[in-house]
Length: 238
Ligand SMILES: [Zn+2]
Image (tube, rainbow, N blue to C red; front, top):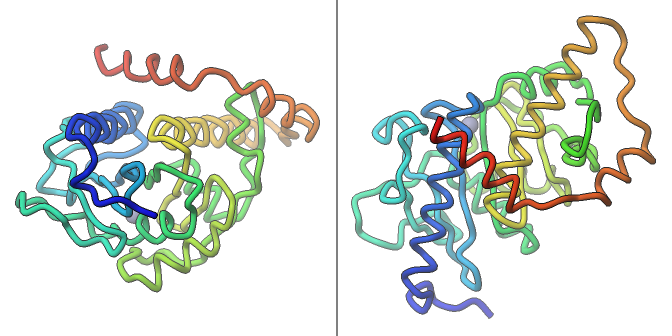
């Protein structure tokens, strides 16, 4: 049974807002997003979501701050009268949260190289290292380039995503999910990295990608999300 967001300690809300803002800044720093794209997080125990507020008025995601994160319900309606508006595509996030109680965060970007693979319907191959773990499950393709603005469109994306970690929105971008903001953001970074290596592979020849067994081993090896997150956060100081 979900609790009311007002019962959530304010420091928990604040630290989640900071994480959402940090995730946005990391994605912008790595050029996976600009002023478009968004990070969202489920407020633990509630039916509420914190999401980067609407686009252009917020400027480049590189300058994203916690005070530009808006609290919404699962219909994408703002819950606090703080003057912030949710992004046009808030229902892309909320419908995925509805369909996937197992996940805690959603990232949507228009990251260029992964998007090209969606257009070509060519698989991004597990080319290298533990970062390939993001490709453990096949990536479904949502066959439309339109912005996801209605409940029906959001629900259709969530159905196509199923239990996968990544989905292509064809000629639009990608969505990655994770248990936490850290995981969802890192999945977007790793996806672009594998897409880049696959692209290099096609420039030079016919890339093969690692075997299923090796990929499964990379997934089992896992690793420490916290230390990886610290690394990506450290890039913001450079
Ligand atoms: Zn979009």
